[in-house]
Length: 244
Length: 346
Image (cartoon, rainbow over all chains, first blue to last red; front, top):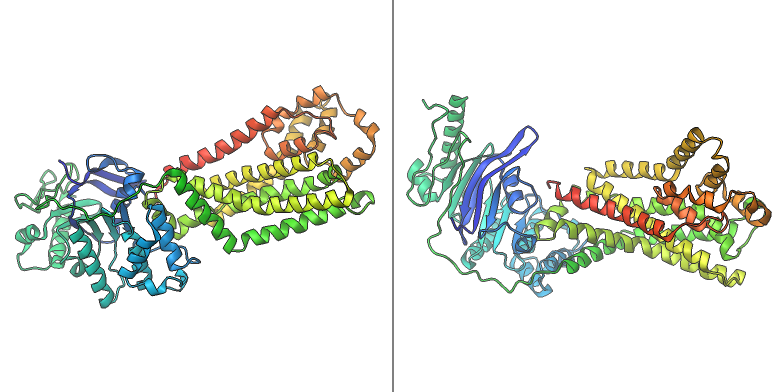
């Protein structure tokens, strides 16, 4: 298998708790993978493993057939569920610091700040930003250097409709550019138009994986992603009860 | 009804979807197939060299400390302490005013051995744990900065933050002493400044290790303060206790030397001894004293004191002992920090 990102038998245990249980999937270059699942399903842990922040208990992750190095990760963009930046520093300083770590120029920082609509807020300290602005700044930092792989952990949480639309537009542009996107979310209506593939994680296990069309063909051709998700979750739960 | 052995297949589309095992016993390997390969519109990506990453993190660390007022506060505290101690260092034996370099060194010994390790630990204790608590460490490391680079950058930034007030304080005090006392024999003072800075850096490394191991800032601060107490107070008393309990007769003379080498005897005693040259002959032979230094090197605070009192106590501290101690402490604490951070899930 020559997927751009190949995850095989990925397991992560925290003591007695199994956060990920033998998860395996492959993503091609340019795919948009929507990772769905309830809280505590292991979505952030999976992203942590991809980004090298969490050590898997077993299994492996291959990026273009090799284990991702720190240099590879300089080509990743990451937006955390709770965007954490240096509060005493300004928008521009924060963005410039993280961009320089990736070897990017200040010009690229300005371009990305403009793209997310924060070019006028460059001198504002981050502690003064609203949640939406912070989210946009996190996205601008992630977009610096036009990353090959964008990992977005719950990027649609708490966004107003206008901001949500802006974010979707930017993600579409990234998709058109050819970037690979991994998006975890509970806002399924927001990710539905973007996603080329859907993965559903339930209690650390991959319950379903495929294109939206394939899921529809299997679980209801007319239904929305949210209804399909609930159907799969319910069936998996019932099956587990029977097995138990 | 399905049994445990039944593999629950959710998706059966031909090429896009692969089966999944709901039992978790089988490998859940699936691959999506994109319809056509796409060309990335990347801008040219430069892979930042490790040295560049380290310097970026170090500069950011120093800049943050400077903005927070840490550096300014340290400069003021250090200048005030060093000025007062230099001027009033002999008040215990009825003298006042700025003395020569050698006397100033004796006066400053206690200040340096108490304050500098504390500054190093306070500076180092939150280098990692604060960013971990706030969540910025995730973003930092997700951007391709290796954990070793991150730690080295933070350590170097901390060194610079520590060095600015210390060097400034020593430089100003040294200039004032030289001009006021018209003393040209600056070597003991330079030795104090260099060994004091080295002492601070060793404890900064220890603070960094504490910061890497602890989960919260409070936990890290408490651990750092406990380590300071052990290094400055507890170690000496325990060491003396061991000498007395195991070699009570043979160690009678060594204890006196140790009390001087450690902080147990007040500076006034050493000043008195400095005035009375005859007192020096009362000490044990130099060869005997050197034999005690092996285990003094376990604690950098005692080694620092032994180095700076070598003339007064007629002790010779081999350069190799000093270098080995510094290398082991620095290598040990930094190595431990890297080892721990690499095993930490963020």
